[in-house]
Length: 174
Image (cartoon, rainbow, N blue to C red):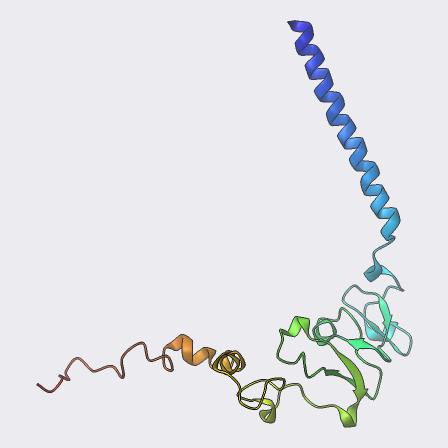
Protein backbone atom coordinates (compact mmCIF):
# COMPACT_ATOMS: atom_id res chain seq x y z
CA UNK A 1 0.00 0.00 0.00
CA UNK A 2 2.87 2.40 0.82
CA UNK A 3 4.52 1.75 -2.51
CA UNK A 4 1.27 2.45 -4.32
CA UNK A 5 1.01 5.85 -2.58
CA UNK A 6 4.63 6.64 -3.43
CA UNK A 7 4.07 5.72 -7.06
CA UNK A 8 0.93 7.86 -7.20
CA UNK A 9 2.67 10.88 -5.61
CA UNK A 10 5.63 10.43 -7.97
CA UNK A 11 3.33 10.22 -11.00
CA UNK A 12 1.51 13.40 -9.95
CA UNK A 13 4.83 15.17 -9.42
CA UNK A 14 6.10 14.11 -12.86
CA UNK A 15 2.81 15.18 -14.45
CA UNK A 16 3.00 18.62 -12.83
CA UNK A 17 6.62 19.04 -13.91
CA UNK A 18 5.73 18.04 -17.46
CA UNK A 19 2.91 20.60 -17.55
CA UNK A 20 5.26 23.33 -16.34
CA UNK A 21 7.89 22.46 -18.94
CA UNK A 22 5.25 22.33 -21.68
CA UNK A 23 3.99 25.75 -20.59
CA UNK A 24 7.49 27.18 -20.82
CA UNK A 25 7.90 25.94 -24.38
CA UNK A 26 4.40 27.04 -25.36
CA UNK A 27 4.93 30.59 -24.08
CA UNK A 28 8.36 30.76 -25.70
CA UNK A 29 6.78 29.72 -29.00
CA UNK A 30 4.35 32.65 -28.84
CA UNK A 31 7.09 35.07 -27.80
CA UNK A 32 9.19 34.07 -30.80
CA UNK A 33 6.25 34.18 -33.20
CA UNK A 34 4.87 37.57 -32.18
CA UNK A 35 8.19 39.32 -31.72
CA UNK A 36 8.76 42.31 -29.44
CA UNK A 37 5.85 44.48 -28.33
CA UNK A 38 5.18 46.94 -31.16
CA UNK A 39 4.36 49.84 -28.84
CA UNK A 40 7.88 49.66 -27.41
CA UNK A 41 9.60 49.92 -30.80
CA UNK A 42 11.33 53.18 -31.67
CA UNK A 43 13.63 55.54 -29.81
CA UNK A 44 12.98 56.54 -26.19
CA UNK A 45 11.60 60.03 -25.54
CA UNK A 46 10.06 62.11 -22.78
CA UNK A 47 8.64 65.05 -24.78
CA UNK A 48 7.90 65.84 -28.43
CA UNK A 49 11.11 67.89 -28.56
CA UNK A 50 13.17 64.70 -28.12
CA UNK A 51 11.83 63.31 -31.41
CA UNK A 52 12.79 64.24 -34.97
CA UNK A 53 10.60 66.43 -37.16
CA UNK A 54 7.47 64.63 -38.33
CA UNK A 55 7.42 62.51 -35.14
CA UNK A 56 5.75 62.77 -31.75
CA UNK A 57 6.26 61.18 -28.34
CA UNK A 58 3.51 58.67 -27.50
CA UNK A 59 2.25 57.55 -24.09
CA UNK A 60 4.71 54.62 -24.23
CA UNK A 61 7.60 57.14 -24.36
CA UNK A 62 8.58 56.17 -27.90
CA UNK A 63 8.98 58.38 -30.99
CA UNK A 64 6.43 57.58 -33.71
CA UNK A 65 5.90 59.20 -37.10
CA UNK A 66 2.87 61.39 -37.67
CA UNK A 67 0.03 60.05 -39.81
CA UNK A 68 0.40 61.23 -43.41
CA UNK A 69 -2.39 59.25 -45.06
CA UNK A 70 -4.61 56.37 -44.13
CA UNK A 71 -6.69 55.71 -41.04
CA UNK A 72 -6.63 57.85 -37.91
CA UNK A 73 -8.35 57.13 -34.61
CA UNK A 74 -9.37 60.22 -32.56
CA UNK A 75 -9.55 58.31 -29.26
CA UNK A 76 -6.04 56.93 -29.67
CA UNK A 77 -4.79 60.37 -30.69
CA UNK A 78 -6.37 62.00 -27.62
CA UNK A 79 -4.78 59.38 -25.34
CA UNK A 80 -1.40 59.79 -27.14
CA UNK A 81 -1.34 56.11 -28.17
CA UNK A 82 -0.61 57.26 -31.73
CA UNK A 83 0.47 60.55 -33.25
CA UNK A 84 -1.83 63.14 -34.75
CA UNK A 85 -2.03 63.83 -38.48
CA UNK A 86 0.87 65.73 -40.05
CA UNK A 87 0.98 69.54 -40.00
CA UNK A 88 -1.87 71.19 -41.90
CA UNK A 89 -4.08 68.07 -41.62
CA UNK A 90 -6.75 67.00 -39.13
CA UNK A 91 -8.48 63.70 -38.41
CA UNK A 92 -11.99 63.76 -39.94
CA UNK A 93 -14.26 61.06 -38.52
CA UNK A 94 -16.26 59.18 -41.15
CA UNK A 95 -19.93 60.21 -41.21
CA UNK A 96 -21.01 56.60 -40.68
CA UNK A 97 -18.93 56.43 -37.48
CA UNK A 98 -19.71 59.78 -35.82
CA UNK A 99 -22.58 58.43 -33.71
CA UNK A 100 -20.68 55.35 -32.51
CA UNK A 101 -18.75 55.28 -29.25
CA UNK A 102 -15.71 57.55 -29.26
CA UNK A 103 -13.30 54.64 -28.78
CA UNK A 104 -14.65 52.98 -31.95
CA UNK A 105 -14.50 56.05 -34.18
CA UNK A 106 -12.08 56.19 -37.08
CA UNK A 107 -11.47 58.52 -39.96
CA UNK A 108 -8.87 59.84 -42.35
CA UNK A 109 -6.55 62.84 -42.40
CA UNK A 110 -7.93 65.78 -44.40
CA UNK A 111 -6.62 69.34 -44.92
CA UNK A 112 -7.65 71.77 -42.17
CA UNK A 113 -9.73 73.95 -44.52
CA UNK A 114 -11.90 70.93 -45.43
CA UNK A 115 -12.17 69.61 -41.86
CA UNK A 116 -15.52 69.79 -40.05
CA UNK A 117 -16.15 69.25 -36.35
CA UNK A 118 -17.71 65.86 -35.63
CA UNK A 119 -20.70 67.18 -33.72
CA UNK A 120 -22.08 70.64 -34.35
CA UNK A 121 -25.53 72.10 -33.96
CA UNK A 122 -26.38 71.28 -37.60
CA UNK A 123 -25.54 67.60 -37.06
CA UNK A 124 -28.19 67.04 -34.38
CA UNK A 125 -31.03 65.33 -36.15
CA UNK A 126 -34.13 63.32 -35.44
CA UNK A 127 -33.10 60.18 -37.33
CA UNK A 128 -29.99 58.87 -39.00
CA UNK A 129 -28.67 59.74 -42.48
CA UNK A 130 -29.06 56.27 -43.94
CA UNK A 131 -32.75 55.79 -43.14
CA UNK A 132 -35.55 56.42 -45.61
CA UNK A 133 -37.59 59.63 -45.98
CA UNK A 134 -40.43 58.33 -43.79
CA UNK A 135 -38.67 56.47 -40.96
CA UNK A 136 -40.49 53.96 -38.82
CA UNK A 137 -40.99 54.47 -35.11
CA UNK A 138 -38.09 52.13 -34.32
CA UNK A 139 -35.69 54.15 -36.48
CA UNK A 140 -36.81 57.41 -34.88
CA UNK A 141 -36.38 55.89 -31.42
CA UNK A 142 -32.89 54.64 -32.27
CA UNK A 143 -31.96 58.06 -33.66
CA UNK A 144 -33.25 59.87 -30.59
CA UNK A 145 -32.17 57.48 -27.84
CA UNK A 146 -29.05 59.46 -26.94
CA UNK A 147 -30.67 62.89 -27.35
CA UNK A 148 -33.57 61.98 -25.09
CA UNK A 149 -31.72 59.83 -22.57
CA UNK A 150 -31.67 62.58 -19.95
CA UNK A 151 -35.38 63.29 -20.31
CA UNK A 152 -36.37 59.64 -20.16
CA UNK A 153 -34.18 58.86 -17.18
CA UNK A 154 -35.62 61.78 -15.22
CA UNK A 155 -39.18 60.80 -16.11
CA UNK A 156 -40.03 64.15 -17.69
CA UNK A 157 -40.74 62.77 -21.16
CA UNK A 158 -42.03 59.32 -20.34
CA UNK A 159 -45.32 60.32 -18.68
CA UNK A 160 -45.04 57.63 -15.99
CA UNK A 161 -45.83 60.00 -13.17
CA UNK A 162 -49.27 61.05 -14.37
CA UNK A 163 -48.79 64.78 -14.86
CA UNK A 164 -47.35 67.36 -12.53
CA UNK A 165 -47.03 66.72 -8.83
CA UNK A 166 -49.48 68.45 -6.55
CA UNK A 167 -48.30 70.17 -3.45
CA UNK A 168 -49.47 68.77 -0.14
CA UNK A 169 -51.75 71.81 0.41
CA UNK A 170 -53.54 71.43 -2.92
CA UNK A 171 -56.52 69.18 -3.26
CA UNK A 172 -58.40 67.97 -6.27
CA UNK A 173 -61.81 69.46 -6.96
CA UNK A 174 -64.71 67.25 -5.80
